[in-house]
Image (cartoon, rainbow, N blue to C red; front, side, top):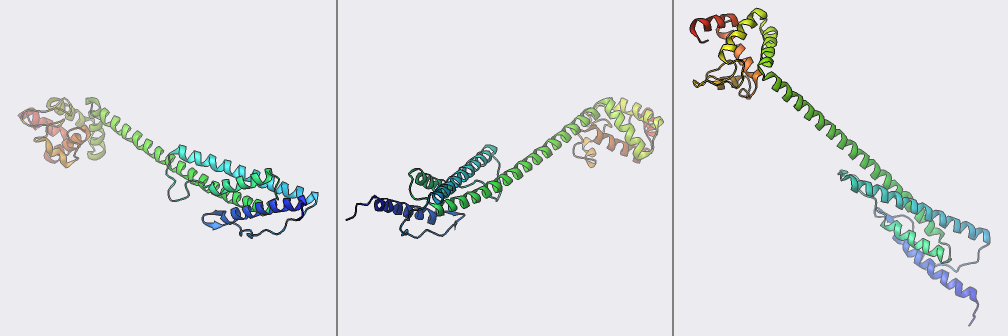
Length: 276
C-alpha cells in the first residue's frame, strides 16, 4: 500500500468537496434552489498551479466578504423594521439569512482549513448574497412606504385635531355675549339684509330677554338667547341648540323674520306687551 502523502491529502479534499456539495444542494431563496447540487462524488483533485490557486482563494475571499456585507445589511434593515413597530402590509416584512449564514460558515471553514477551494460554493454564496441584498432593498422600500403612510396619517390626525380645536375656540368665543352679538350682526346682514338700525333693536330685545346668555333659562321653559319656548324648538336648526349660541341666534332671527318681519317690529311688540 502506498504511503504517498499526496494521496492522503487528495482523500481529505475529496471528502470536503462532498460536504460542500450538500450545502450547495440545500441553498435556496424563497424555496428555489440557487445552483445545481455538486455531484455527490467529487473527481480526484489535481494539483493546480500557484496562479490558479491564488485566483480561487481570491474568489472565495470575495464571496465571503460579499456574504458578510449582505448579512450585515439584512440585520440592519430587520432591526429597523422591528424598532419601527409598523405594519409593512402584505409585502416582505423581514429578510431571511438562515441559508446564507450556513453557507458562509461552511465556506469560511473550508478556506481557513486550507482544504480544496470551493469555487462552486463560492459562486453559489455570491449569488445567494445578491438575492439577500435584493430582499434588503424590498424590505427597506416596504419600511419606507410604511413610515410615509404613518407620517401622513399622523399629519392628517394633527390637522383634524387642530381644526377641531379651532372650531371649539371659535364656538367658545361665539358663546360669549360679545361674540354672540358679532355673530348675530353678521348673520343679519348676510341673510336678511338688515343693517345697524335693526341690530340696535335686536340688541335691546335680547338684552331684555337673556342678556345674550346662551345658557339663560326661565322657569316657564323659555331657553337661550332668544328665549325659545320650549327650548327644543331650536333643534330645527341643529342638535347642539343647548350649547351653541350660533344655533340659537339662527333660530331666533328666523323666528323674528317669520312672525314680526324685522327686529324693530319685534322690539316694539315686546315694549308694548312685555313679550314677543
